[in-house]
Image (tube, rainbow, N blue to C red):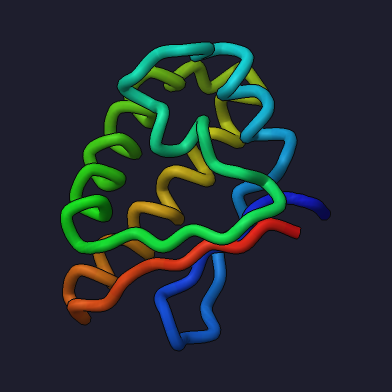
Length: 105
């Protein structure tokens, strides 16, 4: 499944930012600068997040989980599920003092 695969740099555990979820968020949030760190990711490129960016990603995940809380909407459920897993990865990266890297498929 195409998308962006995130992992803690040097580790094997991965989280997939599915292309469907990415497209849905881009369409829904448009040019909302609050979510640009995720919306502006290149689905075919490479990115690396430092500790300060990871802190921002944790807050962003919390906002998205709160905003997309309609449990009867399938897309909202997928956004929440991704954000919960991605937040766990971010917290783990902060605890280990490591960066997160992402690469497009």
